[in-house]
Amino acid sequence: MKAFKILSAMAMASLCFTSPAQADTYPSQAIRLVVPYAAGGTSDTIARLLSDRMASALKVPVVVENRAGAGGNIGTEQVARAKPDGYTMLMGVVATHGINASLYKNIGYDPVKDFEPVTLIASTPSVVLVHPSVPANSVQELIDYAKKNPGKLNVGSSGNGSSHHLAGELFKSMTGVDMMHIPYKGTAAAQVDLIAGEIQVLIDTLPGAMPHLKSGKVRALAVTSPERDPALPDLPTVAEAGVPGYEVGSWYGLLFPAGTPKDIVQRMNSVVVEIVNTPEIKQRLIDNGATPVANTPEEFAAHIKSELKKWAEVIRTAGAAVD
Image (cartoon, rainbow, N blue to C red; front, side, top):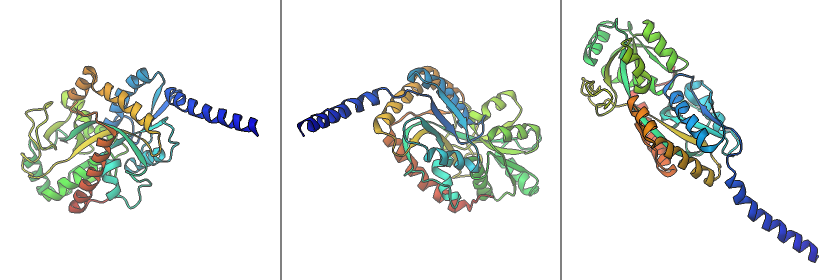
């Protein structure tokens, strides 16, 4: 009996000793960073911008995986159901954690209960883009042309239920124009068809649109933020350009599945916040039209709850629905 008590005490002491040691060894294998959209979009670009720096800081590979479909719901649900051990992460966006819960009947996950927020990385305005063939150099001219030619213009999006889709629906609702929605499997595919003239209008994130604006392949009419963007100071906001009250923005943040140990969440938060605050990464985000954020898990969690409430009202008012 005495020997049993000694062995039990030794076992308990061993557990107490190894638990912190195990925490200290995280991570010990590759980390999977799931982007719930196709390659080439802004969420993918930001994920790949961070992944190399994360790998260097954590001393393990950080592998970006694209799991597109259902407006981001497929990849997001996969992460929600993943083992909460710190080796699967999600690049969450405004659609997956703000819009989709009100736009779809069943998204397959709870944006609050099924995740542990790590940090908000950046926020971005969107920009109203048109193909050069469209005879409009301002938002008001676009509205006038669309009203004179109902159904003639195609407005693309990165997929049903995406922030691009909702931005277009809100624009149509607030201006009374009739444009045909054309969903794509990702932003990159929509951009290709905009450049080719297969669609005529696209409300895209500013970082994603910037290379094409610089090349002159598409034309920007306005940004969707409440204020002008420093990257394009001469470009008016949609509200300034004739649609008072119009405001749409995007954001990008990292999340673990619910149940991931708090010490792992805090470790990842410290690493990513430090990366985002480096002068090089900050400048690269700013140059591409994004505003660096890098906040605490608690602040990101509060932001998600606020966005869910905001977009529920926007969707109700706009009458938007998945095609």
